[in-house]
Image (cartoon, rainbow, N blue to C red; front, side):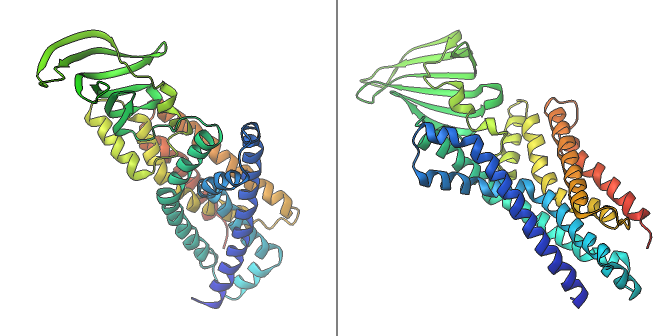
Length: 361
């Protein structure tokens, strides 16, 4: 690595680290004021504040990293422009693309790091944060976070649910093993699907079997339409974790669940959109770096640092608004999942490349 590349990267790392610390601090501060009433209302212990926000920090870092890269590239190149260091570099025979290449390589590495952060830290972290807020602070029952092959006990009944689709309040392939007080099997209920309606879990049809508690032999078997499951858990017990928009699921889990849903003939659109978003979101780091380059190279001295930062934040906000809108359209099924997840990246990438190529050497 040349001296000039080390110099460029050192400035970029310094600016990016400062921007990351600022954005994460602002995010945590806003989150604190949003959640502090819940902690105070339930007299939560002081360490729960720390555990909650520490658990959410990986997700926060992942979400603000593209904007942080945008700011880092802008401050680095913008500082070179204002101090005439960029002019000196180019006078020394260093081309524009040689100057920005270390920044693009660094942005690519950060994009890969962002994916790893999402895959191994952000998803478990938000899961733990939800547990702290719901169970340890509010004292509610721990939500059922698994989406497939779910086993749990409800009174004397043992439930097995093959798939849970929280956003549709749907349970798929349910088996209920009913035991008496001495834990002897006395019945079994099987239903293909059950939906939450008017405070009950309603199955279209269910096969109800009764067994002898002494011999274990089958006594009776009936197929009952419009059967109400004897399940005391409410829909929110399954949807509590899903309300965060599948944030507690990483790319591998989303891919697994989407394949399971498709195999069972269920709608997997939301999971497919979120799965592609787990790849598209880290790639936004590289996109934001490319978009920042032409704005940072403006020679107009009237563009001061404050205005430049405002422009950067405006670009970042525009990106995330477009990305959120396209994701919502993808959830509705209007756009294919991959297009809904990647369109914002591709759109800003083309705009950034156009402005970069339009910049004179």
